[in-house]
Amino acid sequence: MPTKQMLLCSILLTIHFASQFNVFGLENSARSVAVRGSMFCNGNPSEGLTVRLYDRESLEHDDMMTEGTTDQSGNFELIGHEEEAEAMAEMDPRLIIFHECNVPCIVQMIIKVPSTFVSLDPIPHKTFDIGTIHLDKKLDRNFKCAQLA
Image 1 (cartoon, rainbow, N blue to C red):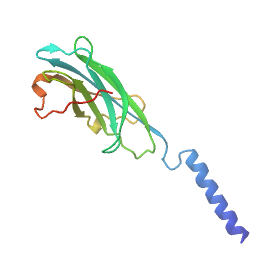
Image 2 (image 1 turned 60 degrees about the vertical axis):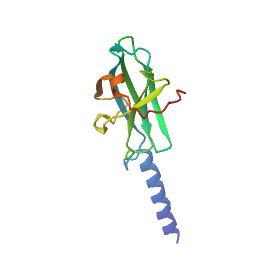
Image 3 (image 1 turned 90 degrees about the vertical axis):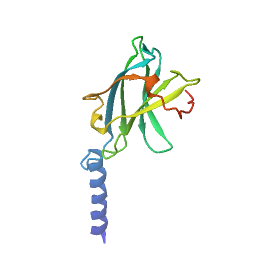
Image 4 (image 1 turned 120 degrees about the vertical axis):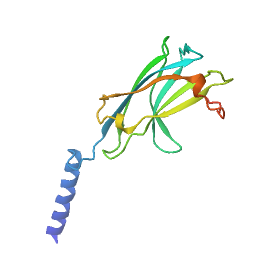
Protein backbone atom coordinates (compact mmCIF):
# COMPACT_ATOMS: atom_id res chain seq x y z
CA MET A 1 0.00 0.00 0.00
CA PRO A 2 2.73 2.55 0.78
CA THR A 3 4.22 2.00 -2.66
CA LYS A 4 0.96 3.03 -4.38
CA GLN A 5 0.82 6.18 -2.29
CA MET A 6 4.46 6.93 -3.05
CA LEU A 7 3.87 6.34 -6.76
CA LEU A 8 0.83 8.62 -6.74
CA CYS A 9 2.75 11.28 -4.82
CA SER A 10 5.69 11.15 -7.24
CA ILE A 11 3.34 11.37 -10.26
CA LEU A 12 1.61 14.42 -8.79
CA LEU A 13 4.94 16.08 -8.00
CA THR A 14 6.21 15.35 -11.51
CA ILE A 15 3.10 16.90 -13.06
CA HIS A 16 3.37 19.93 -10.78
CA PHE A 17 7.03 20.61 -11.57
CA ALA A 18 6.62 19.84 -15.27
CA SER A 19 3.81 22.38 -15.51
CA GLN A 20 5.97 24.98 -13.74
CA PHE A 21 8.69 24.57 -16.35
CA ASN A 22 6.36 24.42 -19.39
CA VAL A 23 7.03 20.78 -20.26
CA PHE A 24 3.44 20.46 -21.53
CA GLY A 25 3.47 23.67 -23.60
CA LEU A 26 0.74 25.32 -21.53
CA GLU A 27 2.28 28.61 -20.52
CA ASN A 28 1.08 32.16 -20.49
CA SER A 29 1.99 33.12 -24.01
CA ALA A 30 2.01 36.64 -25.37
CA ARG A 31 0.11 37.47 -28.52
CA SER A 32 0.47 40.79 -30.32
CA VAL A 33 -0.88 42.67 -33.31
CA ALA A 34 -0.18 45.98 -35.06
CA VAL A 35 -2.57 48.00 -37.23
CA ARG A 36 -2.12 51.26 -39.13
CA GLY A 37 -4.11 53.34 -41.57
CA SER A 38 -5.46 56.74 -42.57
CA MET A 39 -8.92 58.26 -42.11
CA PHE A 40 -10.54 60.92 -44.28
CA CYS A 41 -13.94 62.61 -44.21
CA ASN A 42 -15.19 64.54 -47.25
CA GLY A 43 -11.67 64.57 -48.69
CA ASN A 44 -10.03 65.99 -45.54
CA PRO A 45 -7.84 64.16 -43.00
CA SER A 46 -9.81 63.12 -39.91
CA GLU A 47 -7.73 64.36 -36.99
CA GLY A 48 -8.46 63.30 -33.41
CA LEU A 49 -10.55 60.19 -34.07
CA THR A 50 -10.49 57.55 -31.34
CA VAL A 51 -9.20 54.19 -32.56
CA ARG A 52 -9.11 51.11 -30.34
CA LEU A 53 -7.72 47.63 -30.68
CA TYR A 54 -9.72 44.87 -29.00
CA ASP A 55 -9.36 41.13 -28.59
CA ARG A 56 -12.79 39.59 -28.94
CA GLU A 57 -13.18 37.09 -26.11
CA SER A 58 -16.86 36.22 -26.53
CA LEU A 59 -20.10 37.69 -27.84
CA GLU A 60 -20.54 39.59 -24.57
CA HIS A 61 -16.96 40.59 -23.76
CA ASP A 62 -14.00 42.16 -25.55
CA ASP A 63 -10.64 43.07 -24.01
CA MET A 64 -9.29 46.47 -25.03
CA MET A 65 -5.59 46.09 -25.76
CA THR A 66 -4.78 49.69 -26.66
CA GLU A 67 -6.27 53.01 -27.72
CA GLY A 68 -5.02 55.97 -29.74
CA THR A 69 -6.09 58.90 -31.90
CA THR A 70 -5.50 59.88 -35.48
CA ASP A 71 -2.92 62.62 -36.06
CA GLN A 72 -3.36 65.84 -38.08
CA SER A 73 -2.90 63.85 -41.30
CA GLY A 74 -5.57 61.32 -40.30
CA ASN A 75 -2.96 58.60 -39.67
CA PHE A 76 -2.76 56.18 -36.76
CA GLU A 77 -0.74 53.17 -35.69
CA LEU A 78 -1.66 50.87 -32.82
CA ILE A 79 0.28 48.02 -31.26
CA GLY A 80 -1.58 45.77 -28.86
CA HIS A 81 -0.66 42.67 -26.93
CA GLU A 82 -1.95 40.51 -24.17
CA GLU A 83 -1.06 37.39 -22.29
CA GLU A 84 -3.34 34.51 -23.19
CA ALA A 85 -4.14 32.01 -20.44
CA GLU A 86 -2.78 29.08 -22.41
CA ALA A 87 -0.79 28.50 -25.55
CA MET A 88 -3.80 27.18 -27.48
CA ALA A 89 -5.88 30.33 -26.93
CA GLU A 90 -6.22 32.42 -30.06
CA MET A 91 -6.39 36.18 -30.38
CA ASP A 92 -9.35 37.53 -32.36
CA PRO A 93 -8.36 41.19 -32.88
CA ARG A 94 -10.72 43.93 -34.00
CA LEU A 95 -10.04 47.56 -34.80
CA ILE A 96 -12.82 49.94 -33.80
CA ILE A 97 -12.88 53.45 -35.28
CA PHE A 98 -15.17 56.02 -33.67
CA HIS A 99 -16.18 58.90 -35.93
CA GLU A 100 -18.79 61.59 -36.64
CA CYS A 101 -18.29 61.91 -40.41
CA ASN A 102 -21.61 63.04 -41.97
CA VAL A 103 -23.67 61.66 -39.06
CA PRO A 104 -25.40 63.38 -36.12
CA CYS A 105 -23.68 61.22 -33.48
CA ILE A 106 -20.59 59.12 -32.84
CA VAL A 107 -20.67 55.85 -34.78
CA GLN A 108 -18.23 52.98 -34.76
CA MET A 109 -16.70 51.13 -37.66
CA ILE A 110 -15.39 47.65 -36.84
CA ILE A 111 -12.63 46.01 -38.87
CA LYS A 112 -11.60 42.41 -38.16
CA VAL A 113 -7.83 41.94 -38.24
CA PRO A 114 -6.87 38.73 -40.10
CA SER A 115 -5.31 36.06 -37.88
CA THR A 116 -2.25 36.01 -40.16
CA PHE A 117 -1.25 39.35 -38.57
CA VAL A 118 -1.22 37.96 -35.01
CA SER A 119 2.31 37.33 -33.71
CA LEU A 120 3.16 34.81 -31.01
CA ASP A 121 5.43 37.32 -29.27
CA PRO A 122 4.89 40.52 -27.26
CA ILE A 123 6.17 42.52 -30.26
CA PRO A 124 4.33 42.10 -33.60
CA HIS A 125 6.30 40.79 -36.57
CA LYS A 126 4.13 42.49 -39.20
CA THR A 127 1.55 45.26 -39.43
CA PHE A 128 -1.96 45.09 -40.84
CA ASP A 129 -2.26 48.19 -43.04
CA ILE A 130 -5.92 49.03 -43.62
CA GLY A 131 -4.91 51.73 -46.10
CA THR A 132 -6.92 54.93 -46.51
CA ILE A 133 -10.55 54.84 -45.48
CA HIS A 134 -12.92 57.56 -46.69
CA LEU A 135 -15.44 57.49 -43.87
CA ASP A 136 -18.05 59.44 -45.86
CA LYS A 137 -18.12 56.63 -48.45
CA LYS A 138 -18.00 53.72 -45.98
CA LEU A 139 -20.98 54.64 -43.81
CA ASP A 140 -23.67 52.03 -43.42
CA ARG A 141 -26.98 53.90 -43.62
CA ASN A 142 -28.34 51.62 -40.87
CA PHE A 143 -25.76 52.91 -38.38
CA LYS A 144 -26.32 52.99 -34.64
CA CYS A 145 -25.03 55.71 -32.37
CA ALA A 146 -22.23 54.50 -30.10
CA GLN A 147 -21.18 55.37 -26.57
CA LEU A 148 -17.54 56.44 -26.37
CA ALA A 149 -16.67 55.41 -22.82
